[in-house]
Length: 196
Image (cartoon, rainbow, N blue to C red; front, side):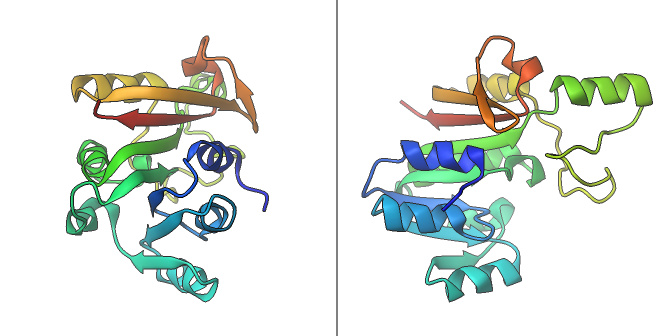
């Protein structure tokens, strides 16, 4: 299966056979790869009922739920990994969601669009408007994004919370790019975090 680049990074770095919760699992493509290719006990939570129905029809273990309110139902350390891909910026309290992820899982993968990417900055500078790009394809009033997080913002948040960044990956387009100047060059970021 051809995964979105951030999901491919996550799938390649999840330990085979692990227990995984994918929060905001969407269409379930990552869950299917983790189950079928990595032999993981992969489960999902998704807010959209049509996406949940599609996942269940594919034989995936997915429940309907909201990351902002429903993560509290999971017991401490019930998973090896919790995953939040392209969802952090849509939550009401990203800080609390991160705390739940690390309470539920030993480690967490978090990916998000970097709103400090040079194209975003240029659009704001020259047009005075929030950009519409391949990765941010809708106008500001249609987007589910309610927080415009940057690589630097995320690093500051996890540092303030005493969270360890174990690894990070940066994507420009669909390709990995160097961490040098990632805050400016990366369109997406993927972090593996823990409480060591």
